[in-house]
Amino acid sequence: MTRLGTRTRPFVLDGELHRPARLTVAELREGWDQHRADVVFDCATAGPQRHTFEGPLLREVVASAGPAFDVRRRKDRSRFVLAVSGGDGHHTVLSWAEIDADFGNTPVLLATHLDGEGLDGQGSQLVVPSDRCGARYVSAITRVWFGPCTVPE
Ligand SMILES: Nc1nc2c(c(=O)[nH]1)N[C@H]1C(S)=C(S)[C@@H](COP(=O)(O)O)O[C@H]1N2
Ligand SMILES: [Mo]
Image (cartoon, rainbow, N blue to C red; front, side, top):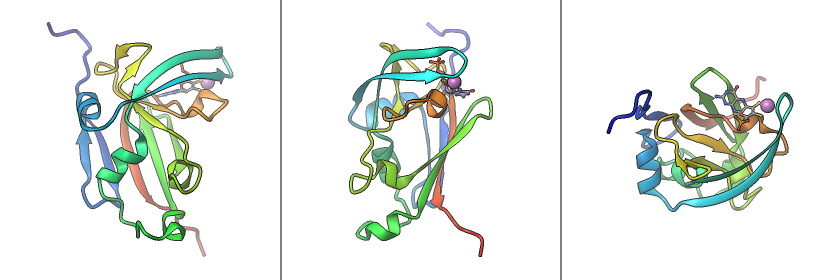
């Protein structure tokens, strides 16, 4: 049965990657180990929210796309950032070092399920379990951009 409003459109994973990709929620579910996160985050307007998410680790999905850094050098990896965009234009950034196992090692997810329901219709949602505030839980993800952060001279 086809549900109205079902959004099977993939999001774009691009930037400084050897293998940029377009990924649907179904592909996120099938291609990587699924992790579970029971989280509480605070919204400035709606108060505390409690949810259970499941999905692959963001770092594993990006690693599969071939980040254009020297994987052996922590110092090189520490220069990179990710920008995650939602369907409504809300976007947020995180550093690669936050999610790299040699640095912050935060288990950030690209959710495939929210409270047991598949996100195939809405699109994936970013899950940042270490954040107290909900602003980086970007929903209906349309793009994940990865690249070096350059500082003006
Ligand atoms: N695409 C998108 N994602 C978003 C937002 C938004 O405006 N657009 N708001 C963020 C904020 S401020 C919060 S607190 C949470 C709200 O999550 P909830 O819908 O589970 O309450 O979503 C986050 N994700
Ligand atoms: Mo919020």
